[in-house]
Image (tube, rainbow, N blue to C red):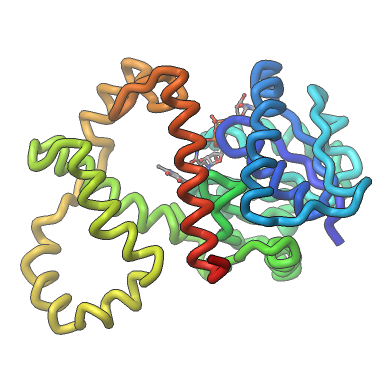
Length: 309
Ligand SMILES: NC(=O)c1ccc[n+]([C@@H]2O[C@H](COP(=O)([O-])OP(=O)(O)OC[C@H]3O[C@@H](n4cnc5c(N)ncnc54)[C@H](O)[C@@H]3O)[C@@H](O)[C@H]2O)c1
Ligand SMILES: Cc1ncc(C=O)c(C(=O)O)c1O
């Protein structure tokens, strides 16, 4: 039974995840190596709680469902039934965290990684009880998107997968168990196929970035929220898909390295909203306004999709 959860790493993903788990009645202890990240996470928590209210996700009874922040990793993980690792997408950074917590947790504590796509089998090499390690891949923003992928590595015990799947269900979220530990799992394999083509089209001057977003959001995104890709094939007709894919697949980007446009921007520290510039530019005020506008729209769409509106 999972009651107490340590969330390790409070950057983009950690605070919303902590808020959503606490709303599900779990005792969360949240830790980051950077004091500034802890401070930022504190303020993000109340923003996420307001969004959870607008989704009508009822608060748990008083006394359960709390988030406590700590700057001490031993304090964070001691007594935890589950540790969720949310540190940067880098095997050696993640492995350092596993090594640090290894001696601090019980042998049956489950260690989940929110990795975007590093195979769990690789991460398991760095922990002493690999049967208790599992992928628990949330989608950003984690307090709003209800789907979470659950991935077993070669050494993950089936019971570990079942425990995490049941936990996700028990707090009203939607687990999807991925059957093979492939890089990127399923969500990011599909997303990165789309992003590779989108970046390529902008880079080749086929379309401007703003128009690319209009085209994909209104032409594909809006539709795909209601009709998934497999159902869409049937709606379009497999005969049409066969004809179009027979000439188009060969023309799609098959780049197997990072696009020069992305390398140029990241080398200039243009990471997107978090640095004020990426594909577009953002003042701090614009970034804040955009975040609440996006949350408001995602909440409205979700309420409709769930038949609550
Ligand atoms: N950003 C996304 O959209 C997204 C979505 C799903 C999953 N993920 C995955 O989740 C993980 C975290 O991503 P993010 O976007 O939140 O990263 P981020 O860079 O925004 O935040 C990472 C946080 O980890 C902290 N950190 C670094 N080393 C640490 C350590 N040793 N101990 C504790 N904290 C440490 C950093 O201070 C930072 O606050 C990655 O594996 C990423 O691939 C990201
Ligand atoms: C670009 C990008 N990369 C990874 C992830 C998740 O792992 C996301 C997301 O959740 O939105 C993303 O947008």
